[in-house]
Image 1 (cartoon, rainbow, N blue to C red):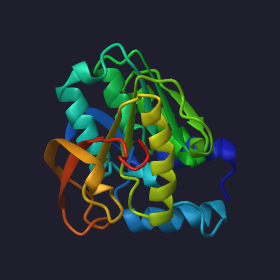
Image 2 (cartoon, rainbow, N blue to C red):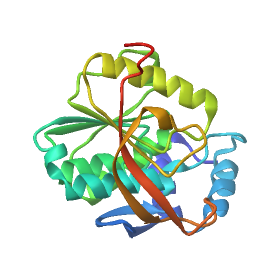
Image 3 (cartoon, one colour):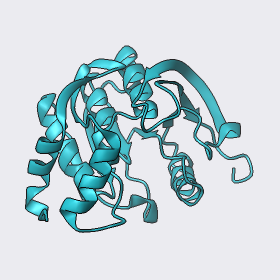
Length: 223
């Protein structure tokens, strides 16, 4: 069984350092075998039903945001950034490489925080990683919020949208990256760019996912 202090050792042992397929400027600790890691994470931690290792993969929405930020550094240059549900830390790393002033990256999974820190160190950027469910509080005072691949589950999508609406009420821009997950709020999105993103076939329904970067618009009902 793994203990909390050994999370980074577990991550190093079960992943390999590889370039992100759609943002090759960035390297991450990534898993080779998706389902094998899912099972091993549960077995080694002795916690059946624990959160899946989302931190071990470069998801389509995050890759799309990372590519867009790297190609359009003016989006983040000199700004304070929130990488919401950061997973591997990919988006925050891209933002810092593109010239962001600072980045706070949050996730509810302690493994994501450890993996994100390893990945930030690997790419020689400084990011403030925090384990927290910030949807239960007011959005932090940042210049821009990035949110990738979170609309796959209805309860989570509803909870996240309530949080993001509070950010919009504070006039904080929200950028979403998504390959068309089931609960994506399509009627509230303005498309910025669309990419063909290589993904892990065992996790998706294809080897390449058409993924877009959007601006989240204010909910007209609430405005």
